[in-house]
Image 1 (spheres, rainbow, N blue to C red):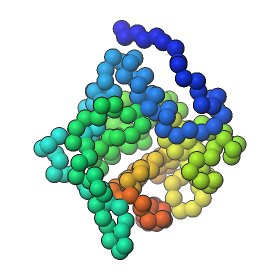
Image 2: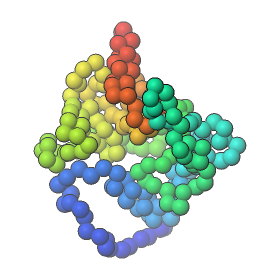
Image 3: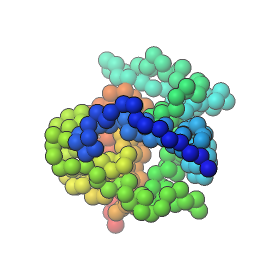
Image 4: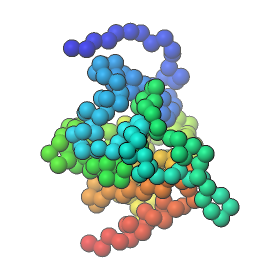
Length: 230
């Protein structure tokens, strides 16, 4: 049995429930997972999540035999796309500190396996990672209704939505898009995904561009929902 004890040397930035802070909690969770399990975070994720789900191309770095498959990361230019300066040097080695908040590289197939597991309440293809109640808690809005405590990126960022445990959650259907109860998150490189339990639907959008044109994902999502005819 692994045991760990200690006391926090840094105070909380805000009392619990006082203000939304993105990212930090996930990094802290990553450290706690490593200490409680007695395994490095990357090894824990590989053993407990990636291997059971068959996510063979997911990790914090890309081994040499797979590097030719790594997508180029672009930024927008004047009428064209320009490769980012570090596009060819990313993920060449394991990070010194695997983050619980970011840094994994994956494929569409691997990402789909993870999304299917959550959409199916913690189990897919005979592999159960989470209980149904755990997934329900993760995908339930945990945020306060007080706008002053919800401010993040912009004043209307949370319009029609909230935040569960690591996932954004639809709380109000505002247009032709995800049903109430859908959950998702958007990445900085244009990667977005959404799972809609009501429609039994998973939406994956892998762009690999910094500064994705405004409205692109929304237009793509709308086209997906327009195609539902039953």
